[in-house]
Length: 333
Ligand code: COA
Image (tube, rainbow, N blue to C red; front, side):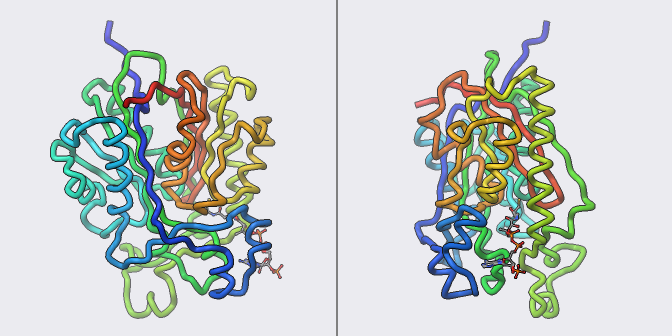
């Protein structure tokens, strides 16, 4: 009988820029205030790259270096790198190529996957599939975004929400029942206008007009996204529960995409998972798009024990959304 392989997360790394942008800093830039931002989003501060020469790949490389150092692994051991990002270094040349070069991953091939805030979960399943198929033993999956590159710091609807950061996980082959177990994902392009960067791609190449009209920045219909996020995450989590015969009391940790504390709390309540089992770091980093979930896993890795049952869930532009069932594995190092 063919051996069944699973993809275990055995090492993690995270990185956020040192430069802190507080709510009080934003008060000086747009018509907003700390009280409103904390009450409506839960965000107190976020990290922003303050050097124009630092790109998404640089954030990702720092996360990978921490991962490799913790795992006591040499860069040569890595076979594949998947970078989830919607702020790639370039339109052409994958950020994964740049990461492999900068981090010395000389034996790895790399590819980007763009599904905005759901990007990391989707990339995790892609990476896990390579391992489950039996041909790969070590795959790094990264979620990284330099959102400050696509934020209009004159738009109070969006500039308060986003930060920069990167998180990386190592997926390793195992025959034990651990690691990435199942997922339910959805996409619905009819939601694309609600949260979008309209220019810079093939639909609307960058031009003087697109820049003048601020079309190279994120625009969002916050109320529509808010409602759809709660519905989508709750629904896919419930489907994962059903498919895997899980009850909310079986779930040790809910690790949701960090977009808005009120969204996180609503999803936790609807799933009947108490707040002490829900991981939150949005207060410190804001929404780092594809990086929120791996950053959260990295931040709280000391709280997780081998065998813990975890649900990861995300919602983002596209619309794209879903939930992944993960069993926490023994970490290297
Ligand atoms: N500071 C102060 N007031 C602000 C503000 C800001 N930064 N942004 C908006 N407001 C005002 C609005 O103009 C509005 O005023 P009005 O009632 O006079 O028209 C009021 O606050 C309420 O705005 P609204 O958009 O209804 O607020 P909200 O409660 O929906 O919160 C978001 C706005 C963006 C925080 C919220 O909709 C959200 O988080 N949506 C999901 C966003 C998201 O997570 N996207 C990422 C991908 S998942």
